[in-house]
Image (cartoon, rainbow, N blue to C red; front, side):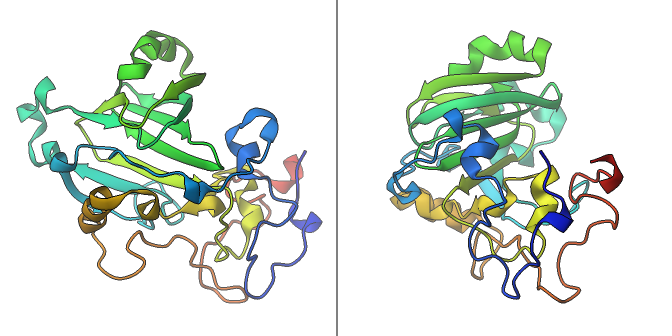
Length: 264
């Protein structure tokens, strides 16, 4: 049930350039039926609809921020919206903007992140590609009928078909966390990928979302990012094998989850 540090080989000098066989696939992590690997390519999926209205976007924070309770470079971007220029006392219901599916897919999960205006939604777009939304203020649209169930259970597993442009949420009070996971990609800059088996297991599959968006949408999203050098989306895997550079984990624990080795 558990792969311990002693069970895996030493990380190669240049890191793992592809998923090691002891690490779960993205389909297994995010719950695709039977964990089956799709045969189509993620690059065949095109995001033809913006996540937020383009005319309501404000500057966005790329991947890699280090702040607050995050103890490693953050694996999602923060999409800004114009309502955030107002003070909370100035906000009204008319300031909410729609959060929409960028492409066809299945909503597989909606969960509460601990407060009434903070939710997580996962969309499986097929072809080993997922988009994830966090700190979503209000489930709406295709998720409107699940608000009461979510309030009582905290998390609901779903299989709701969505089309590009379908509304599933509303945002007003904070930036929207957004990222994409690609099961065919692997970030080689983690010196100790074993550490993520107990928390944020999907992290090595974090992908740049810009190439999936078409035309004007990509241009607007790229121009909104608060980073002008490449890669515009940022970088989260900063480890250098054999050096002090990168993410560190407490000795005697099984990595990111923090559990003592003695408890496994």
